[in-house]
Length: 114
Length: 112
Image 1 (cartoon, each protein chain N blue to C red):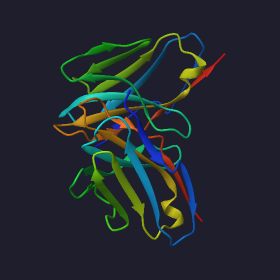
Image 2: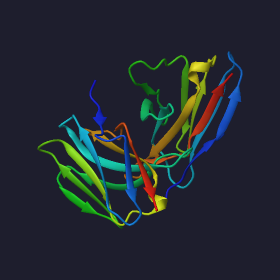
Image 3: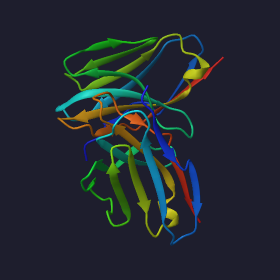
Image 4: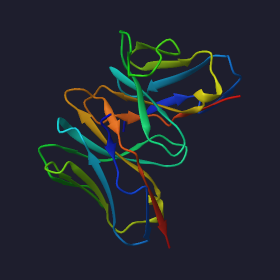
């Protein structure tokens, strides 16, 4: 089946630094990728929708200048958390679609900001 | 705002019993629903889906029921096994997009 890979699986960074998370579709062309954030014991909250070659669409309340999304190819989208703060610590999950099948999810990236 | 919610945050069942996880959704325009299973530290795993023109769909040991009249979705797991222990989310797709809105989740605990 379709596989979506995220990297890194976990990262620890200092407050004020930026962190980049990659999401790759390994065996299909992902025309659309989605980025979610999940706090402990909570549901997945959609942050933004990313279409290949165009600007991402952010959900209400998500700062586009803080969470930079790039979807430069049909197999790669990146999320950069800029000037990270402890409250940005969360589980970030990407999903991808492009073949008409249900969304395929990555295994998430655990971000801890100290 | 609008959301997809669940009635029970935690469900404990004995191994071998059937499990029923419920979900209420609020947007009548949603046309596609998916159940996901999420194990600790992992991303959601697709279980089963159903379109709004159906009211029941069966998979291997799982059945999804959709009641559009009351905007209710349920996931039935037959002969629940320890490996079924996880958090289960329902998700709805609204309109002609691939954007999924997730419910609050139910933790399923299976005890011997």
